Amino acid sequence: MVEQTIRDNLGEIHDRIAAAAARAGRSVDEIRLVAVTKKTSPGWIRALLGLGVFDLGENYPQELWRKHEELAEFAESVHWHLIGHLQSNKVKKTLPLVKMIHAVDSLKLLRALNEAAGALAQPPSVCLQVNTSGEESKHGWSAEAIASDCESIAACRSIPVVGLMTMAALGGTDESARASFASLRATRDLLRRHTGLPLPELSMGMSGDFETAILEGATLVRIGSALFEGLER
Image (tube, rainbow, N blue to C red; front, side, top):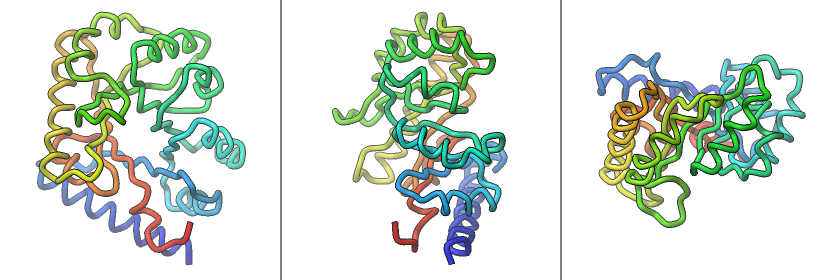
């Protein structure tokens, strides 16, 4: 029952990603699904793994640590993504466990990650979080602030900075979400010019707005509730 429900949901999501990519004139291969597994059981995650989904996202470091241990037998195949806020005092424990950190929301945190990454043979890549919606409750640089930090960002060479991340406004419209995603893309293009970094990744779009994000260039979509719809948490 659980596996079939997740299989059906996953198939629908893949179809929607492909349709959105076609509308944008993009290849579906440019877009990677990160399955958000917060508040899910190891059994549900094992079902995802059995269906070939290996990019898994967690919001909280402690929850990621726990699931990494519970699913230790899949350590070689799972790519863990931390998609929520990371405090500096959790950097050293988190860094060796993850493939990517999506929500690097300050120069202070980036520098802490850069320092810790020097001890790792293969440090994870990071995306810089930009608050494109202007909501005070959200973390991240403003577009203006991150532009002023270009030189300092480029100077962090031990940690691979591969792109930017954002979230649309809570309860916003398709139009406001699209404006947020377009703003992130424009900010990425500006940083490319001023840092020399290629910044190929745009982490944006969740269950309610990932198709809109794909139209504006998303390469990583973070989907949770749509994957597990129909199951009781």
